[in-house]
Image (cartoon, rainbow, N blue to C red; front, side):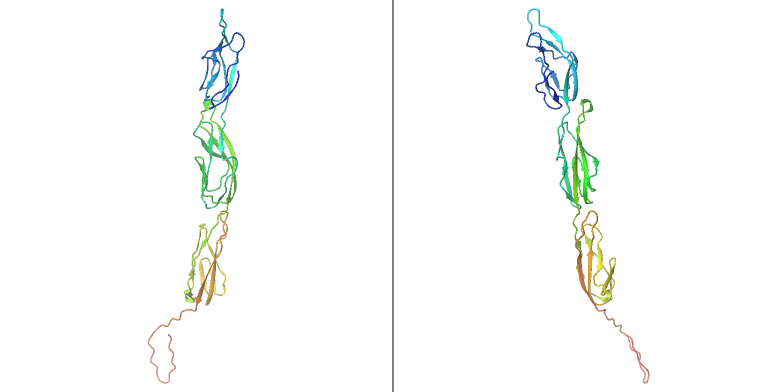
Length: 287
């Protein structure tokens, strides 16, 4: 027997080696015993052609007839023959290794593409962990990562070959994705000047990350802050820092400082009728 093959690839140069008697030789299309892989056939010139639809080792015997004249021709069954069909080679791109990096809070997408074997393909993460916030579906790793770090994992692609044909076939490759901390900003609007009598004041600011913003007074003699409430202590300039320190997914935001003027408390006079005084009496009137 000369030659072997690969599933899904047309056979080339595969034939039964014959000798003895008189050439040329003729092979029966019908095997004496055994079977060839689906998709192939034994030709009368003793070659085997076609595209194998299964992998494995296929054992058979064939009937060969020579060209002897006179008392010939002579026919004989071959000894045991075997044809080995290798499994198809699946490929998966991109190649193993580091994938493009991402950042927390920023949409990410990476597509994996398989070739070889029989479509359709099934893609699965078979070990390790992808970044939180990302999922693998239909060969695409996508989503919005939420936690910074480097993540290592394996992707396995499996084809649709049936078990009876030697399949299904699969390929495993290892990858990594590095996720950087996301950047965030604080929105803290300007604060208007207020009277000392307006105390306490409520503060409000937001971070683009959605994390909670904290507040601190840097003019403790004029104003103090607890949570989001400002207590005004005396006239002057009150300066407040809005800050967000970040977390596993977000880098600290740049602080934002807002200042405003605290004016003296408003004087309120209540109008009313004065009491009638009498000569010689002490007099006092509150307003």
